[in-house]
View 1 (cartoon, helix red, strand yellow):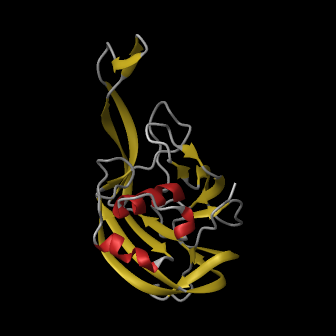
View 2 (tube, one colour):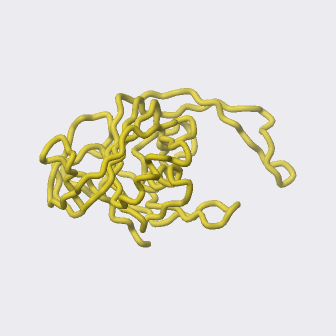
View 3 (cartoon, rainbow, N blue to C red):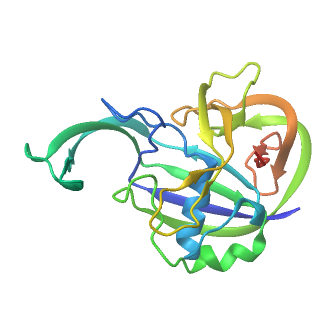
Length: 226
């Protein structure tokens, strides 16, 4: 199977965990919905799950916590206005010098990455990313192999991962309305500040033709329908 291997880099990344709305913003790996958002930003339009399958590995040089100035709002007279107490101050975890290896099976998206319509971001708007390489490769289906930092379907045996529930995609058809959550799946996140690769056996594993090692594989996500 032909695919595109797109390499992104940045200075910082912060992918906030859902349902944590107070205290320090905890980061995890990018959800598959986030990756669709990154592709959509590059395309200048909404890229839907049925257009391509996605696989990825995400690495970084370390993690830290930063202070973040926030804009607080309050309701008054049925409308939002700046909070009487002014701005707030919060903390967020972030990855340092992040690197994203993104694999997409729709090779017609190549021009999207070579000539992006908008700046891709690793989470928040200040986490600017850039594309350093776009290569067409071959993906060979295999039954087992070694995976790096990515999101794998839960449960997995013998993997030291963080269990998270994340959306597969969002529906954003009606302008001015909040997005509707598509299917939600449980994943095990292999966190990116380790060089350990885990040997697994399951479906949807592929060996990239440009992989460093013969046993390296990636997981291509199987989009959920409900």
